[in-house]
Length: 107
Image 1 (cartoon, rainbow, N blue to C red):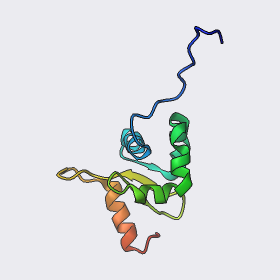
Image 2 (tube, rainbow, N blue to C red):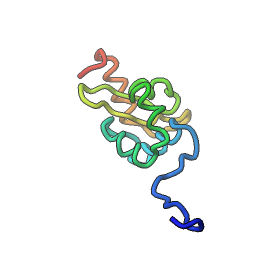
Image 3 (cartoon, rainbow, N blue to C red):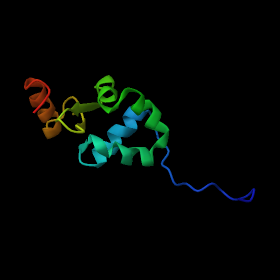
């Protein structure tokens, strides 16, 4: 590259914390996503990979429980966005997580 040439903008810049960016990303995917799809998030937000993978997706979601939830399903699990206080619309992913917890964490 020459001195005046700009670096290609191939990656998205996180507007905030890894948890906030992941919550926004999951929200755009309909409010939940399979845990194995985290690699797609890392492609868009590579700066957050170390923070999330240091704990693992499940523990990361549990550490940021005000924004994110994780439901174990015997596979990669399900990442979902928590509903906000006062929100009347039901969140199927959060309901599923509660159901799985009541069943001992597995289905």
